[in-house]
Length: 339
Length: 249
Image 1 (tube, rainbow over the protein chains, first blue to last red):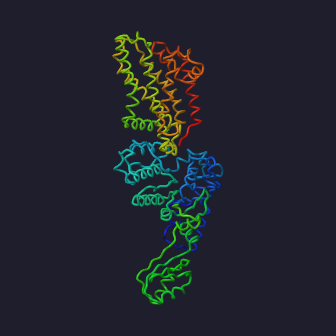
Image 2: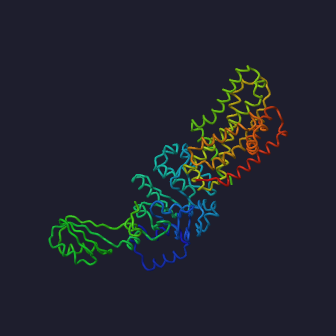
């Protein structure tokens, strides 16, 4: 078993395309084989009366990654997460978190995980430091320094404020603090940034990345595709209680949405004919000297640039439109996540 | 197992006192009712003989004590339902905090509150009692705590079934205040219709009244062991029932 820090560095993720030597690739493959997944979910199903919340969920979460369960509201994300946290009992299927059965060994598990629940509240008139103090007293092992945690999360000024007087972002940061108080191995974050303004959202993304940098595993749910794409190493797309695909955001986009679009503006009359000859191009349309070039494959943009320079076409505007997770979702489910 | 109990209890006390209206309603109302009733009786019969008044000597203090108890129980029902609706119970449960610890903290807070209100009532009501009259303060307080503890278990059952926090207080009031009416305090249980008699036998309020009356009138504890036993049994039964139907969210 390798150290968490090492894993964090080795796992390919995010925007940077890392290049590994064959030797390193072999090493990573070996690591993946020997490493036990932190969370194993297999064949989980959960219904409330006649409503099926989770029809079938199976996936694994590896150590040191940010894993996102994404999908529209009502897809079954929270129920899946709460089954993994041991708050709910699945109707069937098995779950193991850190090798424990979350429902039977819930107290053992709760010592080792940190949880932030969707739309949770605390007592209206509890003070920030009192909540932290209470949480510190709940864990058997040595908790982290609560005051330092508050400082890190920018809540130091608010330590004597009542819970009800905090803003949405401050409440969320307090809940993150409470989720981190026992120095957990796995952190669960449910709809972390829902209802927050963009500034608070970015601040919280940084916090989540900082959790990963400390070697923790993060399991989160979100219905914001941008959040998933920017934050998650791997995502599972969930709809109607089923997981329809799991991979890194890049791979999902590459697999399901290989289309690329280049928009450019030029008054070269011959440009259109040149564009038609670019390999990978599927359509070229033009309106008032604005060209829309559609095609597929990673090479398309390079090919367009190559064509422009080879034929000395002067452009006054050049933009690329790349598909994102939103498009992937649309493609997979036939509807927008916002509907 | 009870890790966090004292911290949670202390926090709940502070949180309760920070809500001025709630604290006044729960502590102030029973004392106020007692003082007003005491005055009315006082004016009618004149000091110093509350004991000789038309109400049996124990009736007024016992009624006031029951009001304190019900007030504490209603406060519990309301708080539990607010906590459930707000997701506070769920949040607390997603920690190593055991459910029984959360409930125990609330019971302790309510018992402390009951004792504090009773002391206030004794102080406020001092002048309505003849000077030098023998009042078994300590035993009476203990009797009230045992009674409240038992009635709280019915409170948990009610807290388990009220649909929303908004209805908690009114539903609780509709359930608990009538209980006082057929607890044997005003009308002897033997003259009640059969159904009500059965209800009275099942509810802890009846035994609470017998215990409190007896203790106020100077009975020793051995004479009321059966009442204490009945209160304990009803605590166990109602706690078991509410454990079955309790919802955390």
